[in-house]
Image (cartoon, rainbow, N blue to C red; front, side):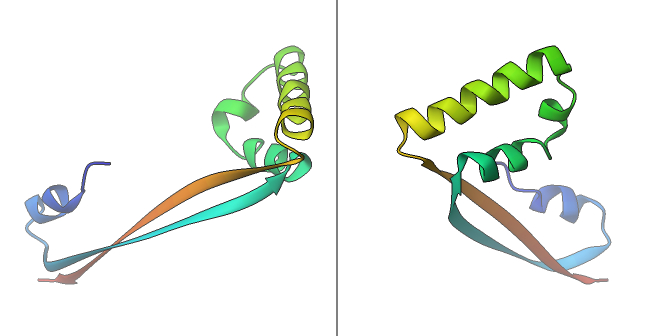
Amino acid sequence: MPSRTPEIESTGLFDRITTRYCQWDETYGAEGYLRVLNTYSGHRSLRDGTREPTFGGIDDLVDNSFGGTIVKGYLTTLYVARKM
């Protein structure tokens, strides 16, 4: 993932930019994972005729091919800078 540090520096408004990364894994059951997917605009914008079978297929995969749980990785980036 590209750093936003050059973009922040180019404003001329900040200095002493520090970047921190926090990476973690979250385990979901099928129902919880579908709730997460339903918060993403790309999934929410699917038409009902598409979303329902897609989510049904994901539910089936999680339950029948992955033992009822899946692990999703997350990465959060924090930029802290002093205002000039």
